[in-house]
Image (cartoon, rainbow, N blue to C red; front, top):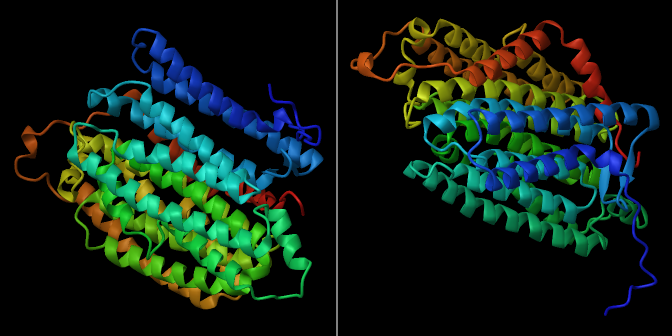
Length: 505
């Protein structure tokens, strides 16, 4: 029998602050275990159970958000996690992504003969990893969250066992994701070697304890390797090569999950690492972020317009959107995250883009039909004649992604450009606006196929596009949110301004 160490003092745990995580974890376990021990559930039961779990986690997140507003942010579990407005805003984005993606997944799985709880369980496990990444105040905890998210996404990308494209996308994502995780872990090791700690608070203290502006080779190389790993996770150029193939090959609802929850969690981790843990080295990492943002903006906009597959178009579009979010990250570095619009604008962009991209891929899910293969541009020809309501919804999403006024996309892009201008990043802001004009051609090209072109020869015998109840609910919610924020953005902008309330400040 091993005696307890009398010198060990267990950290106190505020279980209430962890309720969003506990709801996701408990709900996921109940879903998987309950489904394994019972006969097949009734139609839509798996999806709506996941939606209920996501809503419960979302409600608990709002409760904890108000608690932070009253009592202020703090650290949890011995400083391993941060309980602050930033992490709660990211959790809201992730829960919204889980809810909407589950709704568009429901009919897809039954249509493809894959109905079961596994995909929904993986959604919840990935969401747990994303929330841990947003709350992490220690590189070890961040890495655990990153791997929890990544492993679930690898399996989800390859979950359509009847399509070789899905298997290929899962394998590509796994191999390249393993390399990026290795870069990230090696970067953590070097930063630990240079600072003596993996805790964000202690890393800042280690800088303050020595001569100001010390240049430590270990730390700088470690930051570079961290940026490689994080750049891969957010699909920013030049680390984007995996995303077009994975987005195209993965099941379309999973692609929506990748582009929303996956990107939101990765960007939340990037902001937490750069602005919270490494602000003292901002003069070193800011030029790198500036360069990655420019390359992402250009590559995403230019490459998208030459594609003929809508999923690949939206994949390259997501790279361009990553460049816009990086504009907010770069601006947050100038202000140290505590002032200015950089961090709030980036987090607001993540929420708005998540809803937009889920709605867009929700329409693509319907048009792809049985087999999930009809995602080329010709498959969208004449959609307005078959399903005018779906065509109208898709048009709203495309216009919003282009940044047209009175949509949430305009609010998102205006926010990050304004943040860049406030910090005098004029060149980056101008480049972003120019690429937005180039990207508009992509969205117009899709809208022309939807509204103005006749169906391709032979389309009369093709399976008609159907709109199941769950997908209709998800797309309607996405359209409503997109227009609501476009017309009345003030309430959400005010909420995003609170993300600068970070534990330890």
